[in-house]
Amino acid sequence: MATKFLLPTTVLLILAFLAGCANQQAAGTATPEKPAAGASTTPTTPEPAPDPSAIPAELRHDALAYYGLLNKEALTYEYIPNKGATPESGAQQVEFRGMEKGQAKFTILRTGALAILGSDDVNATQEGLFTTRTQLGTMDPPMLALPKDLTVGKEWKVDQKLKAPDGTDVTMNLTNKVARQEKIKVPAGEFDALLITANGQMKLANGTRNVRANSWYVKDIGVVKIELISKDNDGNDVNSIIQLKQAP
Image (cartoon, rainbow, N blue to C red):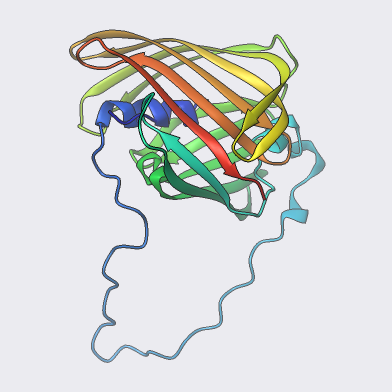
């Protein structure tokens, strides 16, 4: 049984868990469209990529740093759907899309085993980071990913109604907390990380399930490990893990 990465990455991990192992097709497998008859095939000069130096100081808060949004390098992860399962490899990379209305806009691209999470858009505001789009569509209102203040002991609640990949309604009620700074060891090495916990419930058509997730974030790298603990449709324990396999 597959699973989806803190809010919203934790939510993505939960939704993938609900979806099972479906739709794990990696990006880049689609058949390219043929140019229309008579269309010019002359290559155009690509526009220069937006420069992250344009991001103002008030948006360069802890949330931006710990989410790793200024890290240009691709990160390689291993995904373990449940204890005892064979690890699968996937990658994640951040793309800065520029400034708009005082917000810094980013897209997080995922491939390989992480394609089950889809790609999502994240905006940095003066209040923190908000996810505005996932593979399920536009988030209205945007979902809080990380607040700007990540002082140990900080808590925030998220109550959100979403659509699971199968089209059914899911209500998420989560309490998130910045638990502590600690060392975490993953295949990529040992890191000083910020542990953020998420505890709560997901309400489904067939009942309510308790959910617990732990996410370890490293400043200027991003998430290095996520662990989701829940139960499947048969009531069996599920412990899904995503952890950094290769550091930049």
